[in-house]
Image (cartoon, rainbow, N blue to C red):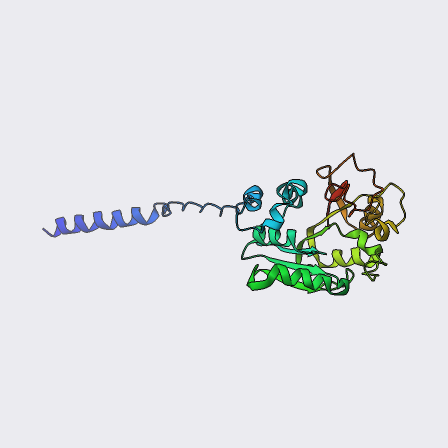
Length: 271
């Protein structure tokens, strides 16, 4: 019996010794799967500009002007998007202010800017905004070279039928802003990558700046020179509002051409 116990004990000790000498196996772990990278945010959808223009809530006085002004195409050219901040420079009666307001929506903002014009600018603002209309629109009376906006706070500045007013003296009680400083002021308020969209009545090539006072037109080369000096990059020029039948000599309020002038349309980008 003693020999049996001794043999069992020896066998157990031998097994323990063999186990101690055997190479250790590392624990096998199942690799965890790498979580997928978060999806890139989707690009904002392009608004349905035609539907915005076709909104039955628009004023009849505005919709009557749509056929010649082609607002849906102009809005697409300007690339105005929901949630943006837009300055409607020299907004006048606010035809485009209202459209900008509808495009940018409740999360966006439109600054309806006009120079004083002897009180005319404020009158246009009051009529457009009376009764609490256009809650996302802020009126502003200022000269073109002193805009009511912080540095790099604006996505789009639209100056429609306006740059010629820089040289409007007799009728406008000008000057309404130094030309070079006005373009530099637009550059100041725009965000990098922001757009400066310009539309105006065309004067003959080489026409003097006094055309802005006499016939309310401007040679597009004068606009382009000022934009280049302010470090804007021309992104696109459109023929959308061209009218080869306009000989550029009549004043824009002449019944023969009013509403049908040849117009330059430019989109600049701030670097």
